[in-house]
Length: 387
Image (cartoon, rainbow, N blue to C red; front, side, top):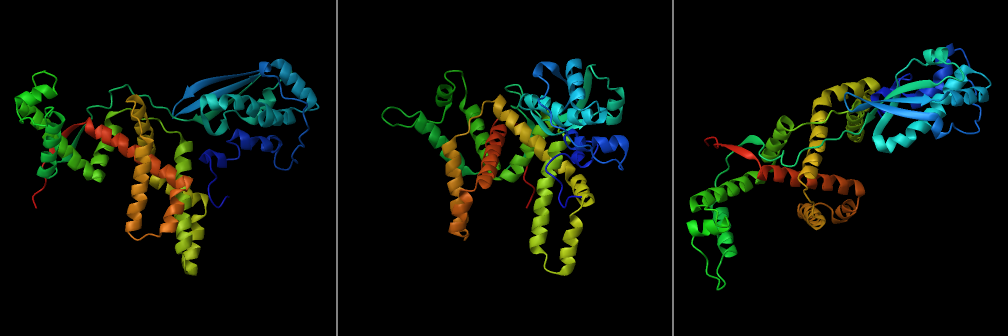
């Protein structure tokens, strides 16, 4: 077994599960482990595209069933090229013909992970007749997609603790409003119904209603400052009230593999005694990874569903990310870490690290979308607990 799980689906570790890893074992699977592997013979050319057809059928959990049909002409030619050996023909079919056929479909169907053979290879050989069409079926995970209707993300309902009202922010908001509607001479308008009506473009808005909107805006901004509470509330509302994607096992395993690798590397760095080093070695097993995967499955699922959900909201609402604003935020982030005493040279290197920039940009986009959701949510305010 590998020390760490490979970067693919969990099913890839089962020798009979994955077509791309299964095929070199086909002769042994058919005739027993005592049979030497049949040497592969060179083939002049793969069957023409016209001799192959690929059909797809949707399966649950973001997967597809792919059926590759090889024409009778192609099976006869390939069988003859393999000296009439059915087992070697099947190995060639699965190693060369099918991957070639699926390669053309990979980008269009957004396939991920490894294709999984849905048929018993021994039955494929026993049912094979040279010159007759042959169908081979696989399942494969595909990249999930989530489409939301424009406006469906507005008005999500959730509760947040009402923050202490910040009078200075309210006064700054009213002053900004007055300055926006000041006379050409610079005279500020009164905070009254006339100003409210002008703001609403003569739709009869009263100052009482406009003032309530201003106070609500100040409260939202104050709540967003406590971003951990506000963002968590928005995320839970998204998961509960908007559609979510079905996640393929491939993505869950891949994300778990990445996290598990980080955990092990950290433990290896921290291990000082022989006992601690032995404990780390015990983690380098399939069973340990499986345990970790099941322990983290719920949180991994939540994180991935949120990621696809945030992307769908941004697309449906046509939210634009300002590259300059994102770059400015990165500079502020680095400057703040410098002020906290981190090494300047190391931070400059970190700023140029593509992996770090990708993580930072993803976090920035997440916050932009969550702020938009908070701005357009139907918030029920709960009172602050007594001190």
